[in-house]
Length: 379
Image (cartoon, rainbow, N blue to C red):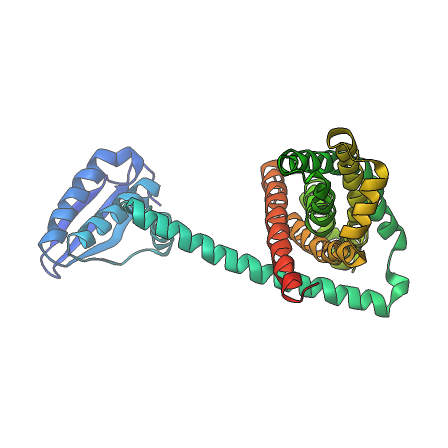
């Protein structure tokens, strides 16, 4: 084999016998000026018509030489010509192929206008939302199937995990639910009294508080707080397990992550949210009652009698019926985002935020659908 010093430099010569251009020598970085000069000659010939380049005479070819050849070929094709390689050695063919695969686009795509850009964004987000909806339905099916397997084989279900999750969701979340509900109930009562006392109808604030809290505000407010507190915690827990590959470890051990991780958390939310809703309703009514007595001049007897006349058991049931469905949505979205976490803290934070935002949005949408449904059946 010839040593590096004995191999001639890069050259390009015509072969009139077969009409080809012969490339010889070293097409390497140390011959860069000569390589560029020969590439310019090759480009000029390619623009004049189809060219066949015989590469069998190339003794050395490195990344620079391969890149210059591929760049020249691309420029010839852009000009409407054609450059064909013949006699390529196998090792050189591999290098040329690698350079071709990693060749960047010749020019970035033109940026669309404002209107087209907005339409493009709307279209992409619509498609992404549809895919996420299908994913959520498929995930819901997996959870329901896992619950069915647990029901058929109750001995495999970890009851301690369910009790622990109920404690995290319901009992540990009670203080903040009571505090926020109490304050919101007082604010609603104060604003109602402020408006109704102009007409001498401040006693009707009890009707306002009772119906609004028991049918709408109580369960909605509680669900939003649970989505922010417990939903984000579920996403963070599962996301952290994904980052540490603990979910993959469960699969390797032959355990179903849906049964182990998701079912206890979803069931805990479906049990805990109705409990918190009832507690939040009582706290909000207490706050509204105190405000009505201190700000509206009502007595405790007047408030209780008016409340008993204004609301019934079915109003309480409206809120309690909504709660499990809202809990199911919060649990499904939280676990989906948790399983979507990748191996970085930035990904974890992004999916926790997405979990809370999506859960709150879907809770509000579901509450509106229930409101329309209950109004339609006069319940």
